[in-house]
Image (cartoon, rainbow, N blue to C red; front, side, top):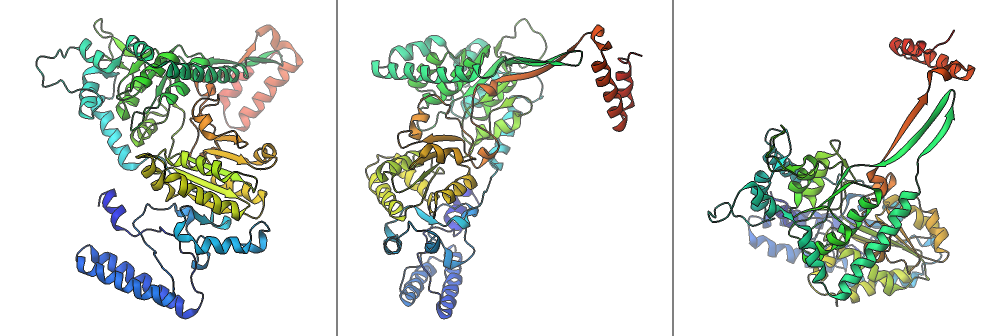
Length: 573
């Protein structure tokens, strides 16, 4: 079945059960209902009549138990790490004995008003880290097919002709292949793929004064932070027996940056990637973005991209990784013009085909990360503002239908207030943002903990992309958190400020990968290379000869006689 059919057919865990009777008779009835409901769902595929029978049985069982048991609404799947092992813990084990901040009256209020809830309640003990492969298998297969079409011989750069064919078929550019009046020469094809600097400059000048000012200001803040990062790591040298050892820090030559097209233009991603590569010192910076809006082109102009490729998806990543030229031949040809050089590092967020393509080229060139759905975790206590917390959760949820917004708090009253605020604020959010955020809320949740320390443990388990701290002594609480992509300390440090250029980069690790890596920075474009310098005249010292003797001994311990003999050539009797 297609993914769409699976999502609409297979029953999945959706609306939380607020409580289930613990009596054996009700437990048996609960099990019976579970089986009957699933059977009716299966029969519904073949006989619509049976679906009405399902609702009759549902009403009977609901009346018997005195509550509504909407076990399997047609909603998006929840992560397996949030499933519960027993029904009496489903989403609502409040753990009152260990939580002095949670009043029983507030918990009862949550239970009694569950129909008005939008954030599912999860207990701390049921959470576990679930790092999922960000590469969609189907997208990977399709990306590989695109690579094969662009480079059928797996040799040489991508040709403008091949890229134009793929880009036109996928809607990146206008299809002129059947129009005999159009010039389909190599130079014409390249001009349809490349957006000129002059076009980007004109797009910038046509913006309003307010828009131009915002772009320039954001560029300045991102650049200042990135340049400070670059200055934080320098060349160094130390003495060793008989000589010197050290490292040098140098940028890669060519950087490829990707900025998504999609539903909304993302000029912020242009600035975050291109400006960072420039601050690192890259000689050439390429930008790819499909069907770029004027604001995206203006951002490319401000950021200083050398070349802008108006193509997206796997075809853009392939072109930046292997280069783009007027000919697919790898041989020297006077008529062959290199339009885009091979990029040493490719960075930037994108859709599932971009992620799949980056997984294909990693190793041939460097990549920043394989990013999954975006996420935010707000850690707060009773001092937090429900209105601000709710606004930050919604801001994350409107990114994508698979985004996650997570609330972790010590205060059940605050949790309920935030839930109410999310419902209230969502109602006034314009479309399509509101529908996107509502869908994202289906995999979002809240966790009520007994102490701040327990909140920190929950946060470290999830290792969120964005971590906001809204507590007393927020800085010290933030310093205790170990796993996250980006940290936002204090209620004034909104995650959206980081999105739009406070300084630090907004391209951050997702899906728990913050446990071992950080976000995009100048370091992704830098090479730290070591060196060893020993002149022959310096080998005569006793310290140098001791180092040589140690090397000979270790080489023979490892069974590498050739290594030992090479070291013996430096032995002075």
